[in-house]
Length: 377
Image 1 (spheres, rainbow, N blue to C red):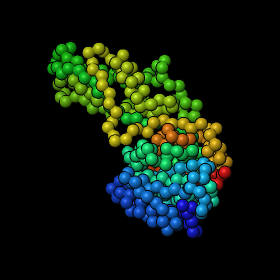
Image 2: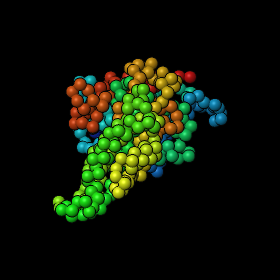
Image 3: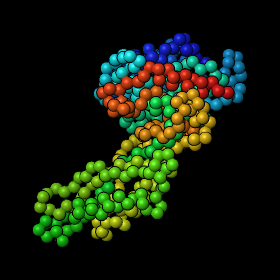
Image 4: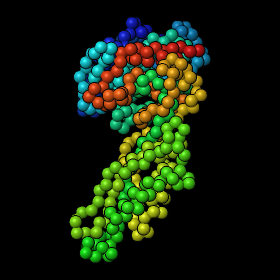
C-alpha cells in the first residue's frame, strides 16, 4: 500500500500522543490504538502482532505493477510507544513540546511516521513500533525472532531515539547478574572453624577491578571506549555473631563489541575462581528475564545508511550513550540510531526526567531527513 500523508502533521500527532499516558501502570493499549487509527486514517493498513507490535508496510509498487517486480532498498523504521513512569502532562511551549514521552520516544514515532507517510519512494518501507522497550523489550525480541518478520530481509534499520539528529552507529551492551559466594557457618568466636563468605568479597572486588586487564579481555572499542564492570548491591550474613556462609553481589556490565553475554559469563567465572580461596564456592547467574540482554553492537560507519542519514541530519556520527533495542536489529541488518531530542542538555537530564521536552523544529527536521533517505533510489 502506498499510503497517503493527507496533510499529516507530526506536531499535532505528537501533542495528542504525549497527552496519552503509556507508562507501565497505564499500559500502551490507548496509545497503540491511536497509532493504528492514525495510520488507517491516512490509507495505510496496520496490523498488531501477538507481541503488541504495530506493523505497516509500503511496498513501493505503483498501481497495476506486477507484484513480483523487484524493489530497491528495504528500510525498517523502529521506535517504541511505551514510556517510563510517572506520566508528565503535556505542555506546549515556545518551540517545544513538553511531557512524558515527548522525546523518548513519541517524538521519534511522530518523525518516523511522517517520513513513512510522506516519502515518495519505490523502496520498500516497514514501520515497526514496539511496546515494552523501557522494561524487557518483549516486543522487539518477538519481532526479530519470528521467521516471517519483516526485519529478516531488511537492508537497513533506523531506530528512533533522542540523538540530537546525530547518527549513532554503536552502543554498549548491558548485562546484570549476581555472584554468589558460598562458605561454611561457624561461631564468630571460632572463625577459623568456618569459611567466611563475606570476607572472600575482598578478593572478589579486587578481581572485578582487574577483570578487563586480563590477557584475553576485549580491547577498548575505538568509539565506545573500554567496557565497565561495576559492583552495585551486596547481601550477606544472617546473625552478628555467626560466620556467614553466603554472600551475594550484584554486578552491572557495560560491554563493548565483540563481547557477548556468554563470553562474559565464562570469562568472569574463571577469573573469580582463580582469585578466591579454594574452599570458597563461586557461582554466577544472570538476572532472570524473558528476553536476551541488550548486547553491545556496532554498525560499519561506511555503511550506506550511515552516510545517507548523516548527510541529511546533523552530520555528526557517534556512538549512542544508552542501551537500545538497536542491539536486536543490528544482528540482522546495518542499523543506526537517530532522532530529535536529547537524553540530556546543559541543564541536566531531559529524557526520563520531569522536564522532558523536544524541540518542534527538530521533530520536523528529523522527519524530513528520514523521508529524504527513504526516497533515495
